[in-house]
Image 1: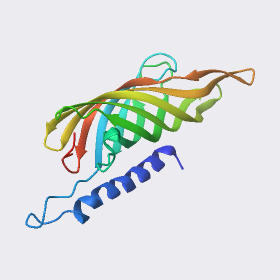
Image 2: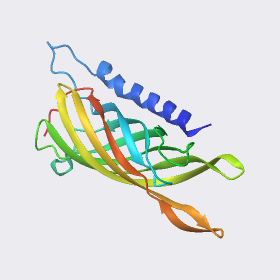
Image 3: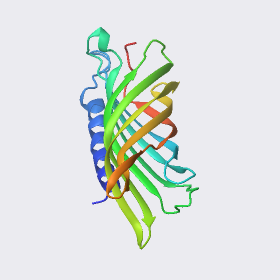
Length: 205
C-alpha cells in the first residue's frame, strides 16, 4: 500500500477523533460553558527545495495538533502534532517525475504570550518516501525514517480560524550511496502557508 493511502487513512481517523469531543463534551449554555477541545486541524500549500537535483517541488500539507490545557504552568504551550505532506507538483528539476511524501509526528511548543500571534517550534519524526527515475528504472523508490526541525507563526484571523506560516528542515539519513556505502543524507527544506481551525477557543495563555 502506498504511503499516500496510509496518510489519508490515518488523517481521516484523527479528524474523526478531533471532531468527536466537540459534540460529546459540549454542554447547554444553562448548565455551564462549552468544554475546551484540545484539537486543531488545518491544511496548507507548500513549496520545497527537494535537495535532489535543482529546482523546487510544490504540494499540499495536512496538520492535526493536540494541545492539552490541564498541564503544569511550566508546560503550557506544549502539544503534539501529526503532519503529512505530498510534494508532486510544480517540478522545476531535471527529474521530471520526482516526488517526495512525508508523514510523521512529534512535539510542538507555542509561545502563548499574545492572544493573536503565536510563534512556535517543533521536532518531528516519521517516514519519508521519494520516487524518481534512474537508468533502466522509470520510477525508483526509497523510504527513510526521517527527522525534521521547524517553526513558524500562527496568526488569529477570525475566532477559531488561524493562519499559519511554517518552515521545516528535514534529515533523510544515508540517502546517497557510493560503492555500496552511504556517503550523504538528503535535506529537503521549505515553507508552507495555510490555515488551522481550533475546535474551541483556547482559554489559556
